[in-house]
Length: 126
Image 1 (cartoon, rainbow, N blue to C red):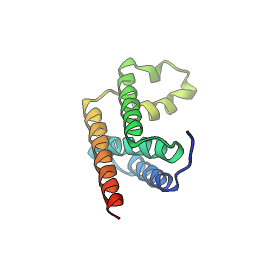
Image 2 (tube, one colour):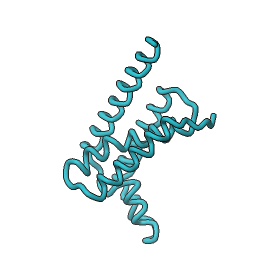
Image 3 (cartoon, rainbow, N blue to C red):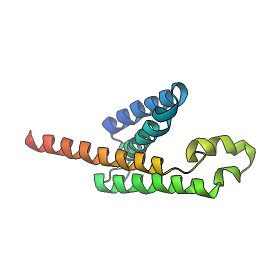
Image 4 (tube, one colour):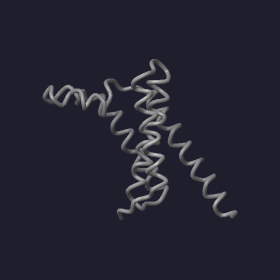
């Protein structure tokens, strides 16, 4: 069901701006690993800002989408489209498969679960 959530949308925008900053102004570990860590949070907050779905479903969708995108890099898919789309596909899909990316995605997902549980716990106390 589609239902706008202002808090998740604001988080989505903040993470988007952080990701743009990371992409433009950083290199190495920060760009490649920390950027991937926040990428799953970016997808998660987008889902939760638009759809009224459970935390568990949003986490599962985010996890599956991130892993599918990473494994698509093994297929060299981004190089099989016309050059007009190549740059965009490289931004979305990335350029090379990495186990490190999968670890970063997994750590991001674990962080989302922990944060959501802490928020739930605090909300039930008040």
